[in-house]
Length: 545
Image (cartoon, rainbow, N blue to C red):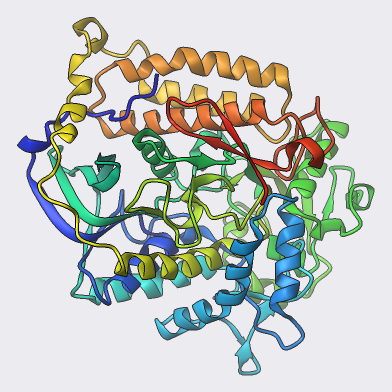
């Protein structure tokens, strides 16, 4: 039902651009990988908008790394494994906690200005961390500062070309390898970019849901492209909902960082009652999935659409200094964090699953790599530990480049199979080329609402099956000729929605961010295993090693 290629093209008739490394997407994963790769290779970076527009830009809390003398990789490892609810790959977590500090030092070398206290790197604590190991910048603008510093390096590097406002449509494979991608240019023309290595750094899938902390560009493009190309994707049922996004009339679902709770904020229901003691011993610093579900429970008990986040007991100057971005955003809507309780509610935030990779970041398709949120390295398991994502991007970005150094050149000439496969969409019947019965914007909103109601924070078999039935019908969208960017983005969202829903229906237990009301218990005997999905294949279960 989901084709390998979603755009009509004849590879032999397209203009071709060659590069050593093709980086798809920006953010910390794309920028850092491009910089490291450019030390020995020519790099072409493709962005849907600009270098500064990515999930990283909106990352407030910080980046997790063992810096303090009273901390250790062993503590960081244990915290990550506990948060991951039994599905972390321990070898990948060991890589993260041991190589993360060097990655942070490299970010500093590249110009990132982390906050200091008394001349030392300032560290804070976030939910489910046993120690203060979160570095931050400009109080609560860590992601923006990292992107700023890396973007300067990319712009000034002669070995990196950047194509802004370009859209990657399909990954091209030949003889079982990825040899590049089909690119839709800003003027509507197409070009084939041939590359020795292709690195997906395209971010997550927050736009699957009506309420999300992610920017508009987070439309699951990388996962969808990789799946269509035949790559294995893993654990797509695990979508993390951030417990505290601003929920106020006229305001966007702005992320209110977990670090606010790390600095002492408490949660109150609309009656003013602090409630987390009913749900977990760690109170507001419990793992995100527990806090998010607790908030939903309190909303239902009090017939409300939000709860309150209260940090009014802290000194106003500390709040303003530590959280300037959050403070100024709230003030824009008439909310003063230092005197007002802030209305918050959960929103889709992070995709734990993604393109399955090895410890070098390589997917099941040779020459195709994935880094950052689009990947499934095994670090996050069923529930990402706060601020591990930025660390993962730099650690595995560097490992990807080490692997690329060892790749041989692509064999010539390109196989004829590419041409014949690329023309398969040319067989679309004329009847199916008619205008879509519904505008894409309407389809997208309907999909987002369905995902919130039926594949959201709390799930059950009946709702999931209803969602699958609707998605199966909607897959006929691929029978139509897709030419516009918004159509291609919707096709990617639809693909990812199908992957998430089918994975959630298959996993009959509750674990981490995946909660089934009809199977509320975690079941390690039957379900301590991964869900693998591959195009034209049934879901395969992979036991933990």
